Structure formats: structure tokens, C-alpha cells
Amino acid sequence: MKNSLLGAFLTFTLALFVYPVFAEDDESANVLEEIVVTARKREENIQDTALSVSALSGADIADRFPSDIRDLAADSPNLLIDDLQQGPGSPTAIFIRGIGVSDVEKNFDPTTGVYLDGVFIGANSGAMLKTIDLERVEILRGPQGTLFGRNTVAGVIHLTRSKPTGEQGGKVRVGFGDYDTTTVEGIFNFSLSDNAAGKVSITRRDQSEGFLTNLVD
Image (cartoon, rainbow, N blue to C red; front, side, top):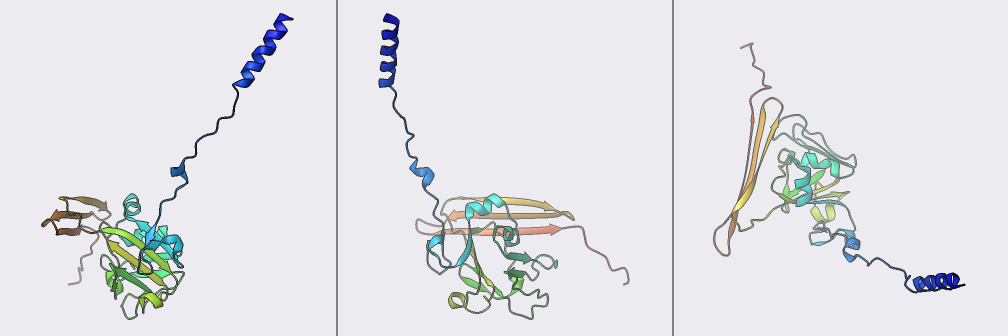
């Protein structure tokens, strides 16, 4: 009888201390990073933009370690960028949703507008831009004539370069490729005064092999 009463008392006592424990809500885990774009020529949340837009921040670009904007095509659906195998500075064929022109002779206007800091690059020859100095890349798919004017039947690639930081410093990127190709790119920030700052961007590319000598002459 005593054992039964003792067991019942212990069971009752343990029952008094059993209560549910709930994990605290982690507010930071439910908060998504806001992506700000300027696709409609004003800063706004990408979710509020009534356009088909893909955006890459400076951190996204640095993580991918791209050499030029051609390496960013894989991060945007329906985008193809080709240098037409003409070497550095060659015309660039850009296709968005299958619309584009492979224009080696530069006889036709491009169907995709490329803008650098809001300035239109009118020729395909200057569109193969390096990425070390980019702060943001926005790819707008579909006709954008209302906001950007002509040569935007397929879409727009909007590139924004980084601004001077006003602090002494910079970064350098070195690359190696086929045919003894070496590339050196760098950005250097410096302060001019308390209210002014400057920035210098440089790039150099050397290739020592892969050339053919004309023996006919």
C-alpha cells in the first residue's frame, strides 16, 4: 500500500512539472533581403517592378568571378551573349528570348540595348564590358521602348559601375588562359579632399601564342 501511494505521489509530482516548451520565433530567419533595382529609372523593390527583371548585386558578381558580361548570361533566363569569336573588342551578339542579330560587320542596330551608368552604348563593338568595376547588373527581358527608346526590342542590359569610396585602397584580379594569355585588372580608390574622391580602373591583356605567320610574302 505504501509503495502504491509513493508511486502515485511521484507520478502526480512529475506531472506538475511537465509543460510544453516552444522555440522562440527567429524574426531574422523570416526576413528576406530586399533587392533594389532601377529598371524603371527609379530605385524600387524588385517585387514591385512590373517587368521581367534579373538583378545581380556587386557581391553576387564577385562570387561568380566573371571576366566580362558574357559570363553573367547563365544567371539570367533566356539570355545569350556571344563575342562572335573575333577576339577582344569584337562585336557582341546579344540574344534575349531568341531575338538578336549576329552582326559581324556592324551594319544593323542591336536589338538589345546596353546601358552603362544610364548612357546608351550604340554599337555592339563596345558591349563586351569587364565586370571588375560593376556594382549592379540588371537584365530586362522584353521590349523596353517606352522607357529606353530605340534598339530595345529584345530587352535591356543595364550596368552600374561602383562609385569612389573616398578611402585609399583597391583590388587587383589576375587571370591566365589559353595561348599564354594573361589579364590584369584593377581598381584603385583615393581621396582628393574631404568632399571629393576619385577612382581609376585599369585592364591589360597579353597573348603571345595562337597567331599565324603569312609565309606567302
